[in-house]
Length: 174
Image (tube, rainbow, N blue to C red):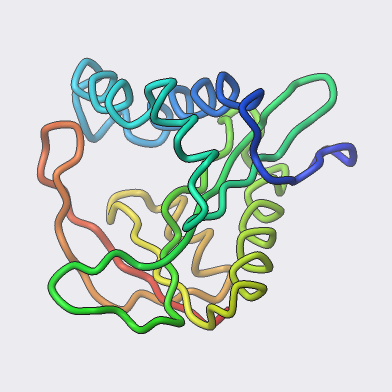
């Protein structure tokens, strides 16, 4: 990892960098799984400027960036309370919403620094357990989370960029 990377809470100034990393990382990770135009449309929805600014403001979740003084935002991660889907999740259970690193900086331990910062922030907020949903076909991410102690607990499906894809749910203690 760049020795000068600073992992810190995201600010409004980071919004363009987060959007850039999202675009490039999603295309690198999922370009073989979904149509590029559909992926761009999904990113436009999830990563509009207003949408990312709202995530910076959101108190319920934690959003951090890996910032380099020359290269800017190299990655970002966010987590917070688990969404209440069919059942109410335990109050001490968090969900990792995102953890993405620009593909030019994969294998530089930027993702490790982001995940560690998120885990520390969640422990500070008294969460003790985290759920990590990952597209099942994303072997790189699944191995990353396994290397960090998150085990595959069950499978699900998700609609992503117009396609129904398998999702592998990983869980672990914080």
